View (cartoon, rainbow, N blue to C red):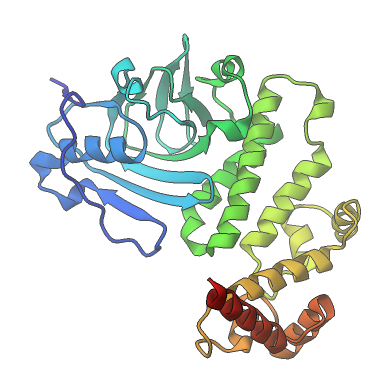
Length: 347
């Protein structure tokens, strides 16, 4: 007989340690097996939204890793088979402030919402509206990567969102879903590797692509959607941010990773009144400035920071820095610290 968890009050639970200060990991293996279902219910309630959880057994093996990138919450769950129900009584609690964009990484999911049903297979993406009931059945062990997007950022009326739920966005069909799936997969798997400023900008780009994909699914005028070049440029810029610390991030390497010519790559950036090399250099310089300003005096060498963000030598870094900001890195840092000290003295 199935075991159902969800009707009782919140119980005590605590996260396990994570390698990232932003992330937390919750696992049923941190409690006795007889408490695993209760623990998992409370973890889902605290991290995502309230749901009934039903399983065939009395114990449950599941792990959840959550990270926050700007306005985006990314939660990866690895779970035994089971069923979840976002019932009206949970919705009444007022915890449905996000749209869930869920990537089915492994396993299958049978989804019901807004009078429709669909099956998500590995690689498929589905949207869940958290202010209306839904049911999902996972017939086998699965991994699901859930991106919680604040509703306001999608800028969609309720009637539009209702048309998007319980539909499978399949990368095999090409178009924007073919770009969205690998982007979500990579970001969920590597989110802890990015410094907070980079992570926040990556989150913005992902939300932009989700919004564009939603518009595409609603059949809006193609003239109002990002064109093929714009989508490709978004993908390239995200790739560059992922690989910014790599000194081997050359035009040839970037073009090869996206199946285009180096000439085509340069043309994409020329359309934005910049060049590829200038855009990468300015991005690296911004990251160096942020890190230098955040570090305590004497805690790190300029060369270490320069190499960490892809500059091949301190000399190249200093030359690029002076050419962009009109000061050497040391002069700029002295001025920043003096300005900060003066501001603190007047408070």
